[in-house]
Length: 558
Image 1 (cartoon, rainbow, N blue to C red):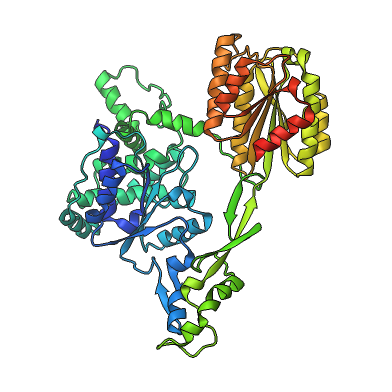
Image 2: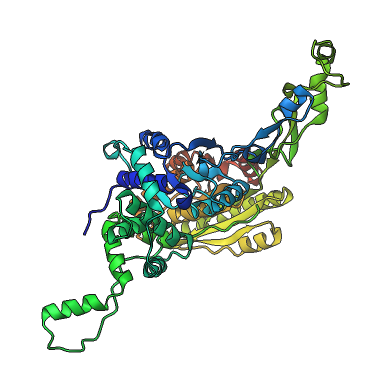
């Protein structure tokens, strides 16, 4: 079996194949932060895709910039209509989309349509972390998916792309033929790997043709197909490719070993042979990636106060700003005229002034700006264990009810998590119903161990989920701090404290505001340390009533 190519080797091979068939293979999705690896890859794009022109795109590029339109500044200066060409005007070019993970749905639709028409090829530079990623509509239309996240300086080399070899391969590409049975085999292989997008087998066939053209062949061989499928199918696979074949009944027990081996090879379908050859070329850690990807949960999307969000469509009006018209920008006509008014006499007396009543320049343009606030989510994490119940749980309930009433008046969302025994339960999903919340809180159970880490983990997961829905979460923790149940369910104060510290730091890393309310009779040093790990406000309940607790949370919310 052939040896698995390195990530850098895959990048070089993908770039060479794309250079041979740019529009047919769509492009490359490169997931990488800014660094040496990405810089060298981009530097190799020039000779690799020459003489195609490189056009850089920003995720906030407007339709006028993409497709062309009225050049307002030049029109105002010339007094006649002046049109500008869009970035997509040249067909003989390839696009480089920076910060591709921030591309909005509208831009994804525009680029997807362009790729479907075969007018350009695209290099999507994805700098996302964790769940941030390129829009699926674009990703499906790019043949190669590369990830430089695990690369070190030792893995990085030079990308030697020779333009003369690429041009020669382009001339041979038309002559490379594909057998009809091979189309069926590659399609079945995609299905076995859990790939249901028909673009994937098409990309694999095109990549195999490009590889054969690079090596001067007019017919595909197994090497071409294996390399193409490993590059295209590997990052897309969702099923474990190594599955035991179904047992075959022995028809003749007297067959010798050589005859039996020959018979098994004859009975194997072609896609099984192709699958085994492809698996041998995949990275060693691919199976772990596939299993974790298959188990990953997809967060839902819905509409969802707290964080300020700048925009140009809705919200509280802000002072207008100088800018350029285009895309979704809205003109502030009054502010524009006010900015142009002091210069009218000078502009009318100019030598080449046009005969008009109002002279407006591009520097006078003012745009409307608004500021909107996302809905807030208060996540109350209440310690319902035996120790807290015997201490100040009843008083804590009163403080929570007051906070819920104020949250309802502000139309904020509220969620309630209780931890006791060995786990944490979401007693109340995010809601605005005060009656339902008070009913759930009144029936809050008590008793058992104190799984503080489990409560923090549940709060973090709920905060992350609802952040994707447009809510701004804040965690309010009410506990006496005496954690004694670890995340794995073991009764150990040392492990429980360590797990709670780790979860608190993860919440802090996600920049989720929090407040720690100590419900114990005495201040707990462990809770003070926990509040520091959370970067949260620490408030002992015996020194404050419910009103002061409410004020403290309001201060935390900003």
